[in-house]
Image (cartoon, helix red, strand yellow):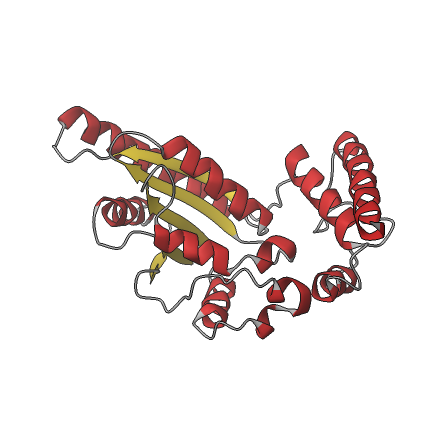
Length: 260
C-alpha cells in the first residue's frame, strides 16, 4: 500500500522524523510504502489569482509547472499524509503554495476514496489551528480524514515530551492502519453535507460565469434532483434536509448577485 507524504517542511527535521517514526510503527502491522513529495523541491508556481482554473479549467492555468504531474501522483496513491511544521501560526509557505495552486479542487473535488492523515509539529503553539485548517482542505478536496496528530517538538530534548510523542505516534499508527484495512465508506457529517449542497446551489447558477465548474458538477450528476452527496453513501436525513435548505439559499443569493 502506497502512502504519499505531502511534505511541507523545507528540511529533514522534526516533521520528517515524525513521519519516519509513523512509517516504522505502521509497518509492524501492514506492508506500507511512504513516498515523499517534497514541496520544497517541486516546481510549483504561486497562484496568480486569475480565476482561469475556475472558469475554464485547470489545464488553462498560465502557470506551467508540476501541478498536473503532482495531481496524477496523488491519484495513484492509496492515501495521503499532509505534513507540515507550524510557521508563523500556519502551514509553511511551501504547503500554502501547494494548496493555493490546487484551488480548483475546492470547486471541483476529486479525491474521493482517498484517506488522509494529518501530521503537524510545532515548537510551542499553533498545532490545533493548523490541523483544523488542513482538515478543512482535505475534506473539501474529497478525502476522508482518518486521523491527525500535533506534536510539540522543542529544540531542547525533554524525556517527558519525547515519551509522550512516541505514544502519540504509536496510537496514530494504529488508527491510520486500521482505517486503511477498513474499506467501508464513512458517512458524511453535517459540515460535509452543507458544503455539498452549498456548492451545488451556487454552481448550478454559474453555467455562463464559470462553465468549467458547472460542467464538472453536471457531468457527475451532482445537479440531479435526487443527489444527496458527492458519492453514493448513506446520508443522515436531517443533514440532507438542512443541506437542501442552505443550498436553496445559496442558489438564490447567486441569482440575486447575477441580476445586480
